[in-house]
Length: 180
Image 1: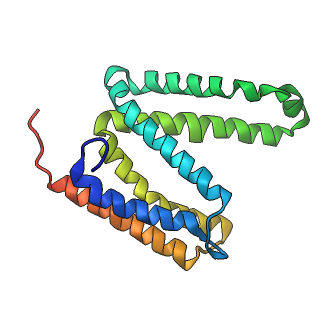
Image 2: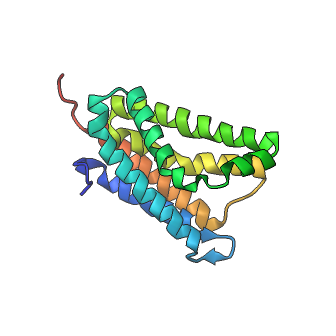
């Protein structure tokens, strides 16, 4: 059963998660578990909690207000890591500092603002089902920018993820819409 009560999406989510699991364990050396796999698992759990806990808050606050709160809270959580930041920044090249600023603004702030806006309009279940398209986007970026091909296991995981997305979307679209 899906934790947010959307039972009709659970088959697609199980299939999609199985595909993501295949992607996580796919390595050039074959199927194996490494420390990075556990980091990905921890990040997936934290992100899932974020999605579930943010839904009621997005009902009370606008996506911009919620994004500002989350960004400030996330920044505050990094304050213990500030030791030596001034020295690091002064020793870094302008290009390195620009890349860090870019990563803080676009993939973090702007992406989460757009994500929160979509969640406030569509809900958690509909918005998160779009995440199953990530394997395809990752494959395209990998091919175009890095000239890297995935392993057969990675490709299989991506296909399973897409099947999960299609299942979740088809079950959601067949569900009768409530009036109002």
